Length: 209
Ligand code: PRP
Ligand code: URA
Image (cartoon, rainbow, N blue to C red):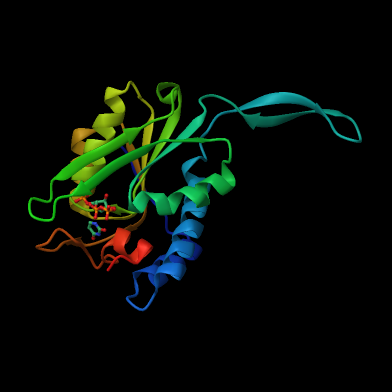
């Protein structure tokens, strides 16, 4: 069974509360999502391995630590996952970016795939799959299946807000994928929206409604 990591850091919780509010417009929403993503990736990458390297400071030679092991890749799920990219790139500028295009059919709530482009060496990377919302879990689960079909084995799912239903689905379908969330909400409403949630993340991010 995969682990669920919930971030209870006061800065993250404060920023998430502002994002949830109806009165928060697209500009502030985008900025806050970028900031929270940066704070989250700091913790998501906490267990990355390091290696000792010998360097020379202006004072002396010394052995210090640098990142080792698999290189990182990030894969935002379009559209809303795009809002998490810049915050992560601020901290991990060398990571490569793939894109998965999925939208949730409003009637069936089933995900519909329309795009997938991953880094050429994606299967050798530790991949962070990004999407602010984990609702039914259909989109995230399908995206993980898609990535796995391309040979990728090391995947972490990073969401801003999750519903218990989405977590259960991903854990059932992909017990090897750990989930990192800033907020674990109560349930889904009849339209598949997270309650209390923040509404439609893509629309709020891009001002399309
Ligand atoms: C939203 C969200 C997730 C999905 C979550 O995207 O960004 O991708 O819904 O729902 P699920 O867990 O029930 O699958 P949406 O389909 O609205 O597409 P958009 O980002 O293009 O607006
Ligand atoms: N997608 C969203 O953007 N918000 C939800 O609450 C559920 C799915």
